[in-house]
Image 1 (cartoon, rainbow, N blue to C red):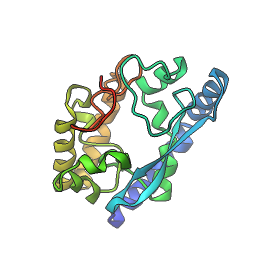
Image 2: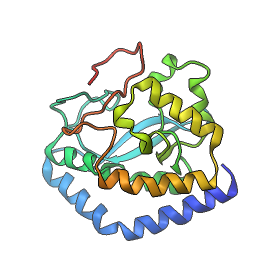
Image 3: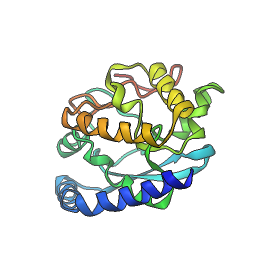
Image 4: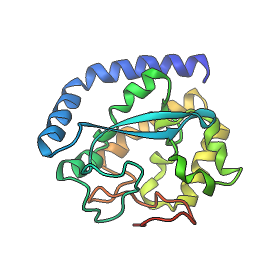
Length: 203
């Protein structure tokens, strides 16, 4: 990660943590009151160069297998969880991951380790960039793309990444959030999140 990107990530994540403190507090309280289980969901992901790290999110599902993918109509998604996912509020704890250097504000979404065997050498180029909270895939209609198309968008970002592209992505992310145009279906389940050939339910 170059120095300019890291400096921008530090300044941006700190500013957002301060500005969004009331939202973070309200979300944490809502999750705590919604049912049993921890407020934060922790899961192993692959970061830059394939290094493991623990991603943080607000818990949006009933306690269970942390490695399981979600699917349309998934009964494990809580009422509060569906709302948090729709507005991407569940992702806000990842600002701490950005502060730690595990993630960036902008980059490909961090990969679940169990899906790595289904990625080709070209697909694995996603790991050449620090994973991000938002990215080129998310601002280009992730909810309308297949898994393969999403990977291609991530690889394109790796080939073209830079400060001005990151700034453009951040600005477009605001519109995506306001439109609730995310990779989740209305019930909070993940769309097209499983690689071709990988076992598991699909939307």
